[in-house]
Length: 200
Image (cartoon, rainbow, N blue to C red):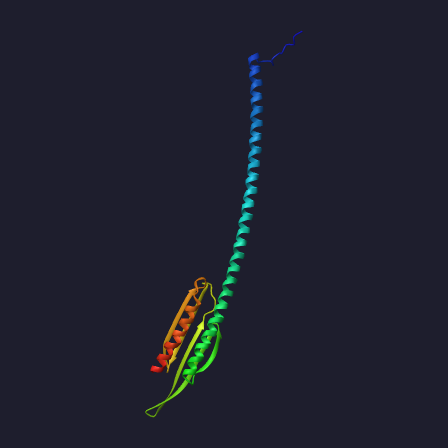
């Protein structure tokens, strides 16, 4: 015998088939929507994970950059210290020879917050027209402390018989320093001062 499919009351055979088809479409849509949602959830989770990883990488790169910067700063200080010691010795040598050329100058080392180097100074007594005057002369040459600009800087200041008339300075970036040029400048400044002092 052949089984008969009896449609629900109130529906024709075609209506029954349409309802079954609609039900299947609804099930397919729900299944597809569920898969899309699940995929989107997975995509978001992956993107979240990747975003977290990028943040961690950026943090690590920043830490490495700061460490490299700190090493560069320490290296600059080391290089500057080496240059300073060499120039300080040269300053003392030149000023000592100047003191030998003009007896009466006192040589002293300089080490303070403005720099390192050496200084010559003297007091002379002047008697003119029955008037007594003290005449002060000095020459100071120093290497400035290391700073955030990473430069090597030297400065000379001098007075001749109470007249502040001698000021010189020079600097170069540490990476471009020509130490021989600095030595030559120091010698030139001492010779300039000697000529001016002798001419007064």
